[in-house]
Length: 257
Image (cartoon, rainbow, N blue to C red):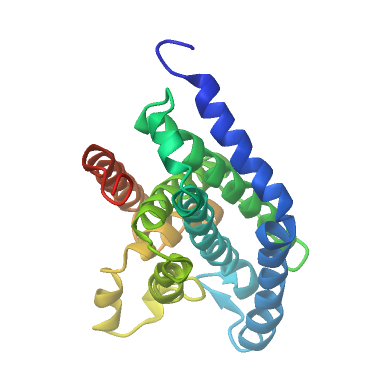
């Protein structure tokens, strides 16, 4: 115990989740890295040959933040949702709920592990990208901050999905039908400044635009929206997820019934 926090309980959950990932290392790490390499071959080769630069940045380098963000969002949601869904599926969630850990300590263990895996994956994809295109990170501290903030935020979102899901098929519904399309339409492979009106204005209602824009700013010192707005939207979504999780544990929704 430390300052009233059950650090042993948090560490036990965190360590268990990290060990589970090591048992599925091929699916958790190798597959996203290989997929990213294929994106470079397809998009960098096919589209890059037609679009040499975007905003003064080589197209191959320009899509790196979008590719990292695409993997980061999907893997954060997947890791956290599966982490909490399995205890529900096996019935061991009741042991967790009766253990001497608070709701937020439980969330810290699951979300911390999911975010850690996503951050490591993001750095691996960044290293892989450097094999294909020249890279220079203009604001490395901001890049790490966005990496951590986005991983934690969408791991919280994935935790909510894991509680909501009543079956394995529902775990993939939100990432496949919502998050991935929004990422593709959020400027992962293009700048929304390239879009004609009214599509550029419509794109501003896509929250993923602000995530990708802020992350891209950390690389090239330029983005589709201001860095302050990007941070504000990301932080706002994180607070909304924390409030939702607090309400879920207070009511026991899909946990105790």
